[in-house]
Image 1 (cartoon, rainbow, N blue to C red):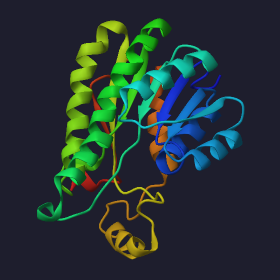
Image 2 (image 1 turned 90 degrees about the horizontal axis):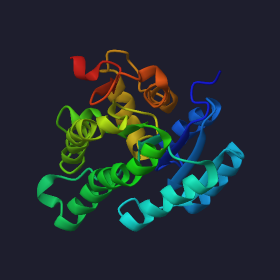
Image 3 (image 1 turned 30 degrees about the vertical axis):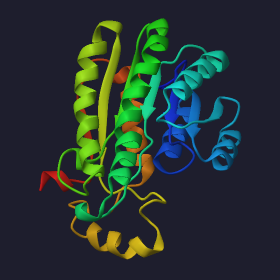
Image 4 (image 1 turned 180 degrees about the vertical axis):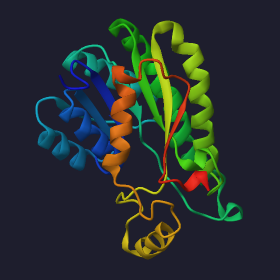
Amino acid sequence: MSRLSGKVAIITGAAQGMGAAHAKAFIEQGAKVVLTDLNEEKGKAFAAELGENALFIKQNVVSEEEWATVVAKAEEAFGPVNVLVNNAGISLNKFMLELSLDEYMKIVNINQVSVFLGMKAVAGSMAKAGGGSIVNISSINGLVGGAVGYTDTKFAVRGMTKAAALNLAHMGIRVNSVHPGVIATPMIMQEDAKEAIEEFAKHIPLKRVSQPEEVSQLVVFLASDESSYSTGAEFVVDGGITAQ
């Protein structure tokens, strides 16, 4: 039996990168998946590639109204939601003194506020399903320092995860955070950054960056009933970076 058979999942930021890898892994493990993203062209094409168990919805993750719409459409298409993967996020690698308030708040809204809105929006549907699993994608920068804005919000996701786990436990909803290290996604493997990433990889204990699929396997585990007693926890997948 597939590990996610009978599960209905919403995955944000799923048109490419890690979100797309998660969606593909979920489909392969028997889930029905609603993929959301602002990139409608890529999202629709990818959902079509995944087949009849995938549905793409264009979504602005910082809109409470659009969250309500996504949950309603997920229920209409597949039934009550069992799994939410809060994957959407952005990074702006700027020196703190050069970061404007508008830029800072954009990072906060997309990386942090969207996670709150997603958890709040999906809880009622999960209650109808008899419980569920929320997986919040943080970062190793939710454990150690990094760029201002990105680091702040990833620490916040880690804290929100623990608070939400306590809030939602009585509803049978588990909430955990995943903390990836350096992952080979389009966002970081652009030509202007590729050389620096390859140099950094030499200092990772496992001597390489991770593939998105390696993170997806952990996300599948947390979405599945295999992790039924795990909640309020952080799961690190970083090749040993934070162990140094």
